[in-house]
Length: 238
Image 1 (tube, helix red, strand yellow):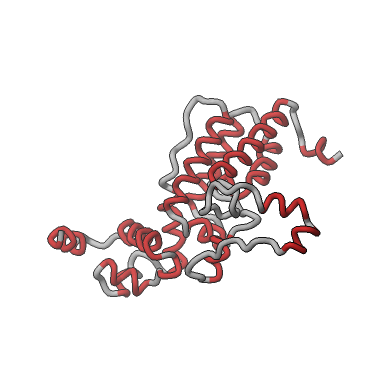
Image 2: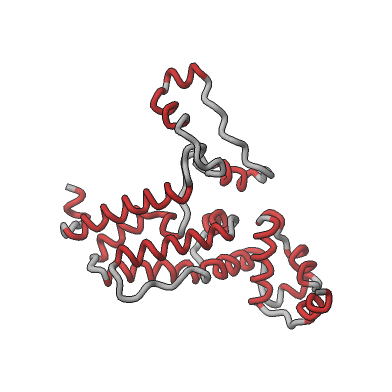
């Protein structure tokens, strides 16, 4: 094992090796632990050696995002648009679950990276090949939002809040005080739903994967209905 590690350390440094090591470090210790110094130490090089391959930490982060997005399955050929888009999005979700730091990293960028743009471009291509107008495809991408990349901005998401604040562990959802439950009985009913996924980011009583697919299928079914009706934004505004 020590011999293998030595061989890896002696392997020539490349941009791909730097990016993949950064992804592995973020997967293991969290994105907040990533620094050029820590990454250099992990690779067994001096920090200045990294700058031959990435100009700065922003470029490093962009490259890491592209590595992760590159793991998403390619589009399924010659299938109905709804099957193709659903499969692509669920593949994206599976990838981001392997890299839990990635959604916040993607959101933090001022401009989409090349791999993200290529992914979005191919998804729009699926819609257009499936009979969508550019007009409808435009609004569909707005409706899908971050879900098209495999994650959603949940209403009660302690894990994502923890990622922003640097907290080590997300706090479990607190029960509603009796007076609050009495004032807002419908919210209380949802909060008290039977728990079947204690790790869910949307609170007890919700299974993340089920909720994600449930909303995705609602959207895709509604989108197909609009496509069949020949929907246009001009008609939608009336």
